[in-house]
Length: 401
Ligand SMILES: Cc1ncc(COP(=O)(O)O)c(C=O)c1O
Image (cartoon, rainbow, N blue to C red; front, side):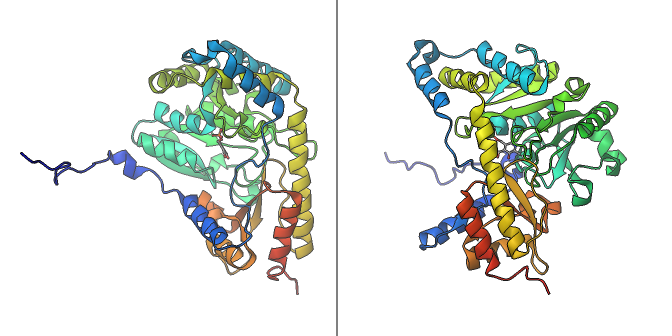
């Protein structure tokens, strides 16, 4: 008897939510860069956001020690080890003067991205609204899409210092909104937020019963002696929302996947409940090394910020020399540069790749209000950043007169 498998009638039929997922705009870009490199070009890739420097050695050493500890070979506690939650609470106390109860106000996450996607699934029913910055980090869109929620965009405009204008939101959107995201120091605009913005946000969130989510991914990276302000420093922040803090950027630990949700105890309880169904927390040795990162010497963080600031200065010196005028970033490791007249952001990025072998990220990839800008990362050496600007200078796009 012969039967052929799979039967001709067999087909994989994905759930509708898979087709709702937003397109990965930057995947196409990576392909273009890779094709150009494969063709032998020396491309300076300033389009991506992957930290280029290694994790400090004392943290790597702690991971090695942790890997040798049989305690960490077992399942970890579902919501993470107490020592890790105490370590992040200590860091917030020291850095921001914010008190957090490690047991009820801290959830351990598999990277900030996971938390940002989970939170929409935790709080939104189909049709509920999430307020999302435009331009903004595309992963906010993914969680909203998976939950069947709807996004209402908050334009970030240069004339408002790239802060959202809550008074411009429609009554309908405000009535249906349950969740909102904001992110300072900001990806992609590199703007920072003052404490007064967070105070206004607490008031706004409380008035409209919206859970406020501060994505503090670049919380350690502020320039010119200005330390970024945490949302949790605003009075009442813990009553209205949470902050997501990742180790990816502060300690160059992007590959380790460690982050935290901090703040409102009920939201933290819901995150832990959801995660009980998905995961059994991070490898214990990773948790151990992360705790050493948070409680150990912080010189590496200061050195890292100084390195990014040096790169920013080098890049902006060259940009000035070629006549490309832009706002100097006050934090994050990005710069947000206006596109010269006559190009869309995608056309401009394509042209720079083809004619200067420099890759930048077109602003349109971050939302419609990102049009007119490109994002340039500070994730290459000062020399490479200078060279990128010089190559662009040779195209004479910004010559005056
Ligand atoms: C604005 C923003 N939020 C969150 C993240 C997520 O970081 P991770 O998932 O590595 O914690 C990133 C990473 O690039 C980011 O740029």
